[in-house]
Image 1 (tube, one colour):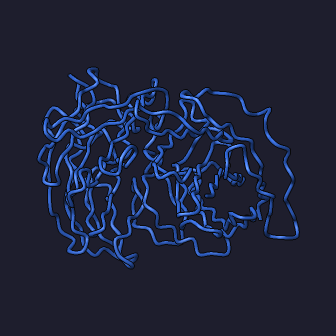
Image 2 (cartoon, helix red, strand yellow):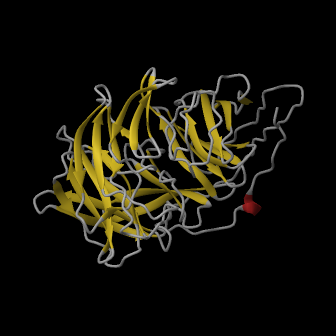
Image 3 (spheres, helix red, strand yellow):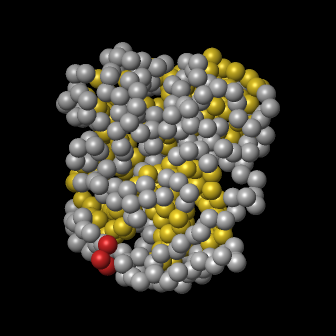
Length: 424
């Protein structure tokens, strides 16, 4: 079994209104070697950092992680890690005593988490049966024994693990994220177009429409198109009940050669509800992250990063329904949630790690060598914590929480899984 190292790290607590990039290599605590060639379990004394209630551990991997998942939160947690060669490693982690056990060979690795692969040639080495063909995405599970995926020709295929159940000709974007809601409906981007050649996701084909499918009936509910001059410069729309009235809205990043990127809000039928200001220059991108109660549970706000590749300006946006506008209410630099050419749009998370009742936005620093916790304030926002990574962020950022515990995790290009445990 591969040796696992659990490293005790020192973490800088950011108490001021700005985040300073620093070299933390000289401030690491001494490391106690927790290896044992005779025992499968590795244990380290998880020490609290100088951030109150925080513990940290590091797991060495057999390759660079591109996607990580957790089965929940608690004393015993299971983690699945997809490496860049498609192999999967699994670990049991005890968040109290730091015991880590690799269970890759012990458990049947039926990995069914949905994510967009780095390329269609990437083969995820799971025991779960795979459809034939080079697919851009993994499978989205819609029922206990049924999955859906986008075929390379743009068809949406329902599959039971052995054969197709139904195929819908919908002209889907091959690398579109598939989003599912509580009613088992699926949102997918459609109508691929090459009329805008920015290519920040590794190709120059973007969607120009979207569709909503009833996965129970395996039927299309709604289809919509954006204006002819625009493309949807995203692989992952936001699909959420922003105004909390019981009906979901869809937030898209639209781009064109004249005005560049802007945020547009639609209802599920494709009716435009609101629009934000464009960047004013083509080939500049904005990354719509998430909508959450960053400042108030009554008025949800959208968090986005404009130009994440050149400066990374974080903005919080409100929906002005009366004037049908998306208004920036707080703005500041410098963070980056995307790498040019990557299909990973999940380098962020929202988490109340200090249990004060206010959600924090967690984003990478501009160099992606640290995770920064940003909290909304009356006058805007401020960074309140910074957690140093073992290398450069290479995966999605995952967070899970309960009333007494919050856990944050990320993978790095140094082949590590970094996990932080916050306790109340």
